[in-house]
Length: 328
Ligand code: GYE
Image (tube, rainbow, N blue to C red; front, side, top):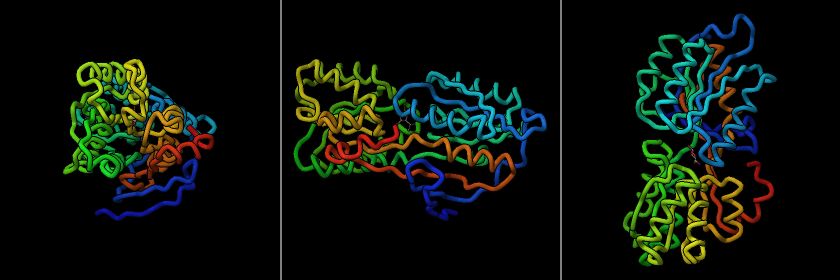
């Protein structure tokens, strides 16, 4: 069932390689009453919120791709990272009779009922970014990133660089129950297993700078200079932690090594300044591909069940070289 194929990156900004897996029928015939006979496609987009630099870049990419000029009428909702609010937003899109729903699910679980409601109303749902645990036949397609592989890449770098000396690590996890946090943790933990790296503590910072800072302050109070290494599930929590580390009189990147995921501008700036040590990229520019999928699904054409965007990774020297040319 897993027929892998690489699609040339022409459809995405910056020549990104895409891996498509599996084959699925489209979301059925064009649906919803929003179009009113015109060619304009009315799309409800349920975004997670605005928790991070990655999220801002993702929202911008989606708004650009789902523009009027491209034939869309976009109804945008950001749920402030509250799963119930996001479910309510999807339900309201169904009630409005949109042609398609795009969903960046905050958490993995809890989607079965509302996805069934969308299916009963003949409104196709396209997932972008994170995944859900609901049955695959409740959505038409998904475009996103391989979070497990991102975690593995980060863990492998940590294992290669610190795995053979006793190292005390703290972890700032992403939003509990999100596929981004669960899969990154799984990939990272498998890559460091059997090394001399010890996890002193691991807590959620909800992917935000503010919570990253607060949780890191707590870690520093509890463990002080015992901490050698921080793994943060995204740049923003790492950037919040930087402030806490500096305020504690320690030097980030030296006294405490820092590994993060995303590679947004502020993270890459910290990396090229030597305050971070390694970043695994997570590409937020998913809009163009998502819009292409939506157009096909609404037209009743078949699409693949999943499209995975390939990520890179950067050390300090590599970050300094590419910083100016990064689009986000
Ligand atoms: O890494 C983080 C954001 O789901 C991939 O969510 C996304 C993650 C991203 O808040 O910065």
